[in-house]
Length: 385
Image (tube, rainbow, N blue to C red; front, side, top):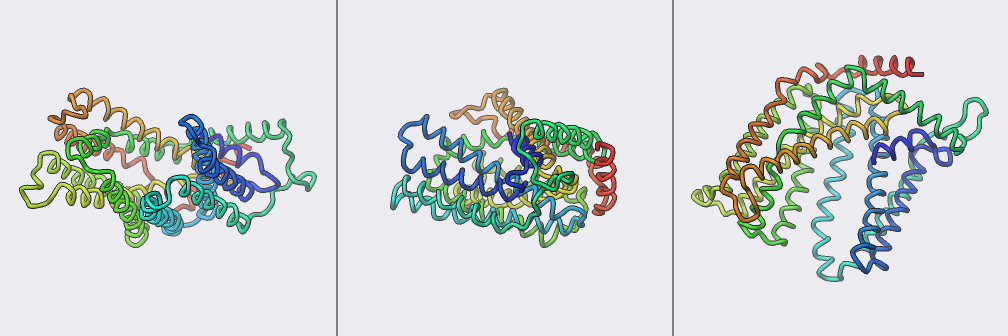
């Protein structure tokens, strides 16, 4: 779905703009969604419809902003690209902290419809800020006029973009890193089984889970800061190798929670789970930042949104596959919401499996220099045109 929106953004300027106009539109769409939730939602079907509209708004604005970041990062070093991504994801994590802190208390004090109505004001900020975005209007070079919104012109432009996208993805400097990212994300995951364990076995309350959400939001911000401060100049291969090894080791500590050994060390289940979530989230965010930097460096001019969304869709597809494999293993080991005898074995197997992509690190770019990549990408564009 995100690839469809980004293809439209890259192919069809709205009122002469490829980014600014779509950000304004997505903000208005989000405000409409939450306004309807605050006033008209009275059953699960209408609520699902309004939430879907809001999700489309968020998805659209997200990929458009990503494309703008890619545009700014083109031709820059890994350090500069990493700083841009850190700024964006740090802002997102800070927003998550504010949301996690205030949302629960506001619901308790004023009710859900008040919170929905308050949330409706936030997308309008996106629309207001979008007007300030510096962007040159797209004009038809032959006539010097704004590009037409005719269906034939849109079809032809979209067709050319798809051809250019396919030509770009086929190149080894794009395909091989993308393949690694997919395999890196596709290893089995035990997250669903752990969620059942902490809610049904340990009986953690929703209030406590809300606190964990706040901690993980802070941890995400911390992970972004660690990457921006210490890792943005480190070669990608070293980052992926180190974070994969450390991540597998730290996630293995979940076995202590499952077996109850943490209590023998005087650590309660609540504190252990919160600390475990904090450490794993910091590491996970720090390890995901290079994925964003790499994806941004692979995107050619005029294809920023489409290719970036495609690469992120590939990563998400790998994550979905990893979740499905983990779900299959959960069933094989007989783990249910009331039975967790083999959960420790599942965690161990998933952690060992996360090391499998390491021999394929050679598929990643060897250094931080983006000049060679930019030249290859320009050659691809010239051939596709």
